Image (cartoon, rainbow, N blue to C red; front, side, top):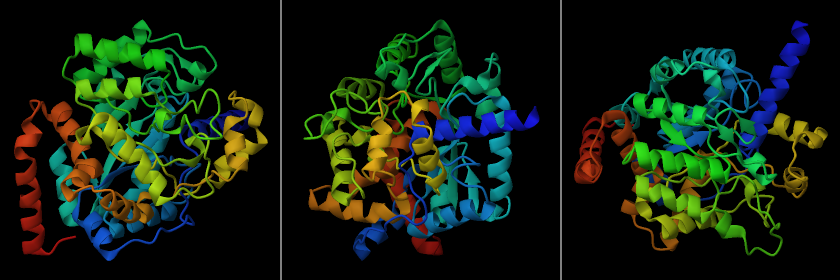
Length: 418
């Protein structure tokens, strides 16, 4: 009986990761050429990305994970929001993932900072370390116990998604909504949100059905006014609706302008993910720097430069996920959308370390300033972190932002770190 249970858990994990963002990066991904100036800018700037690569699918050997972060540090990536769990994973799976990641990182403990406050991110940047920010793409890890939220925060999990694509106790996910089954936020979902706010866990609305997301934002605005909520890795549906090959319903993982605009009122941010299979009507073999810049530019024009972040949603290796998806297409009730995208070549997006300098060059061409990019690459996330984790007043980050940058630069110039 043990063997079938293990197999079910393994397949569930693969399903979760596939729907989380399969078009991510292996270390064989395409490298984008960039100017030396852009490479230097990335190294000088706090950059916070997102890695969707839980143990068992994205990586299986400690050396793979460590290699990924070595290359990221060398390129200047300060930290990563790292996915622990997705789909319908339980508390035991969270503990398994925790052990796997921490065991791997314990081989090089000097290279990692487990973030509890924004000063930890700044310290990691100055010292050339990796800032680790855990996230959960499901609230099912709570099982039936809201009291676990305190333990989750103590573990360093900074953000949580209520509903991962399908229908869960908290509400409905984006794939369920795609199929007309978005029941909206439940009473349990409201209780989960209240506990998240209580312990400083950020509400992430990626992967969430539109009605459930709108209900969650209504609840936040009514009961927790001034507390930001975010979309950590969501592509703008409005950017692709007029593409020649756009499908009538679009990709179920992309979000509407209406949803994104709600974030501005709360003070949160939206991070586009450069995930090829979600680029409805394009599905490129290799996403280009211009296309990645298009997503950032779209959100900046829609939301303003203070409410946009970064998220590649990448992985060390996607081969297992893509292979499984193609062999088990009937498991994904999306009318064949994802498989068709894979068949057209949309199975990679490249790790942030390899693409961000080229994106920087492209954004400079479009007139973006260094100050704007500093916000988008990490500053906007840190503003939200400061407000939620440290109880900072709205506007406090803006008052001290430039001073913090200058202090970091002065320290690095004096001591030659990073």
